[in-house]
Structure formats: C-alpha cells, structure tokens
Image (cartoon, rainbow, N blue to C red; front, top):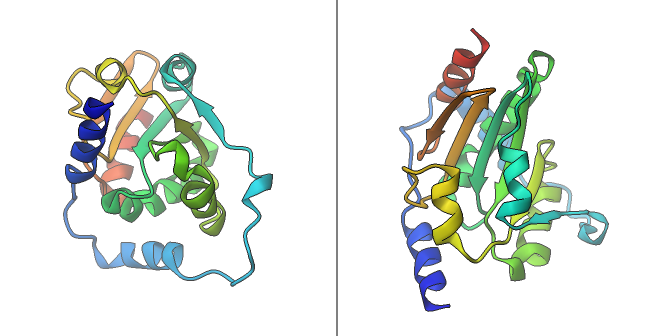
Length: 184
C-alpha cells in the first residue's frame, strides 16, 4: 500500500508541462474551462466504465483500420486538464478520418463520484472516458509502454502495428502534427 501511495505521489509531482500555447489555442482552452450554468450535475446517471489493466488492454491495443489516440490523465493533474480541450478538438476535427479518442482517467476510485464524473459532465466531454482502477501500477505501466515512468499526462497514438508513446503534454498543433503522421 505504501508503494502505491508513493507511486501516485510521484505521478502527481511528475506531471510534464508542454511549451506555451500559441494564441489561437487560447480560445479552445478558455471555452473549455469557462463556468457552465450553475445547474446541479446529475452524475448518478453517468455510467463510468471502470477497468483493471486486463480489461483496459483490449481498448488500447486494437488492431483495426482506425487511428487510436489514448490519453492517460487525471483531474488532479494540471497539465492534463490544460491539454484536454485539444483532445476534444481533434476528436471533432478528425471524426470523418477514422480517428478515435479514448481518455483513460487515473483518478483515485474514491474521487469518481466527487471529482471525475462532475468534471466529465461539466466540460461535456465527447470522447469516451474510462477509469483505470488497477493498484498494481508496477505491473501495468511498463505494459502500456516500456519507457513510461508513470508521469502524467501520457499519450499513445497507434494504428495497426505502428505505435508511438508520448510522456508529455501537447499543444493543439503538436497533437495534430502527430496524428497527421498516421494519416499519411
């Protein structure tokens, strides 16, 4: 248990920042982060899919003709929240080009109802969001990618046998550049 707590603390402290956002990206982030109506959110109706690594593995290792963008994030990770609007933007922009976005939350299970579900609803996330609840991080982190230290945010982009792993946060342009390499 102590190892898990230390690992999660290290994940939190190791969140990786990207370069400054260009001016055109400010509008996306501002719109994403603006206050919504003050209506109460009914997260009890939100069906959050929760997986251990064995259940998540088929979702992050598909062998089809789509480009898959898988982002590992958490509501407590500031760089993760900063880049989330860009994943939502590419989901919309590339929706007719066989690009699928999956957001894998590493929020703590005791925060699903009080932090994760309200965040998803408040920001009206359109990408599929699942939660990974697997306490054996020492086992599943290297299965995601052998170079991953466990820091957030982290992203996998893959299509078929071509796969790239990124332990960084993205600007919108950086994310589009990486996706476009898979479209060629």
